[in-house]
Length: 86
Image (cartoon, rainbow, N blue to C red; front, top):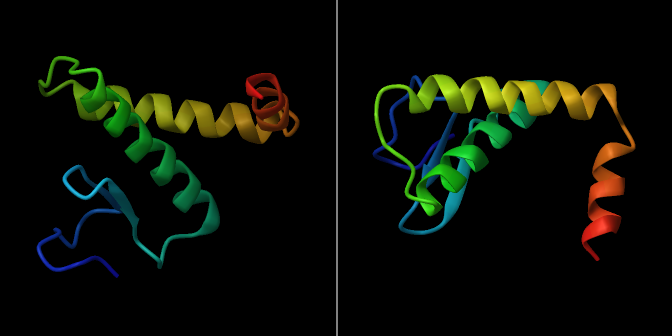
């Protein structure tokens, strides 16, 4: 499911050069959503040139899973945020 060159043990991967996020197609819908949020957070981390140390993966995983839970528990939240940004 991933392009050549990506490790097979990954659920997702951000290609910063091409600005593309790849998600493993065999994941459940919930896992795909969590993985997408995880990869978006990696992209934001890189965009803002935050410190790149061994804590990044743990922080991004916690934030991605936390955001997924917030969105799951508050189904109107994304619509509210989207309408607030227009």
